[in-house]
Length: 116
Image (cartoon, rainbow, N blue to C red; front, side, top):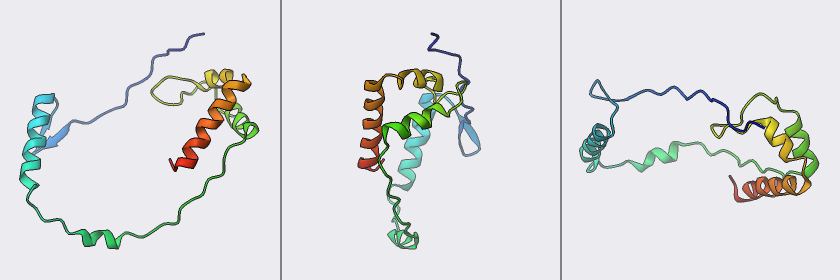
């Protein structure tokens, strides 16, 4: 089974400062240092935080093993989850094993319980 496939890298833009792009690490640190020193003595108005609206918290239910397996099996085999190149096809093969499935469900539910 081929676990590693070529994956397109995300397009990025250079960091610009004073109309000039900064690409190498040394220049990036210089710009960061200059920017920090420029604003380090500014006063921060915390009243802006009072203008933020409060939103209600969504309470998530825990996953069941059946619900988790059902959700995974509906995913397209050809797509990848993220940059780790693990495809849905691989995850489907993993959740066929009940021990692996239970471990993944426990991890997912742990994240829900921790609020992530």
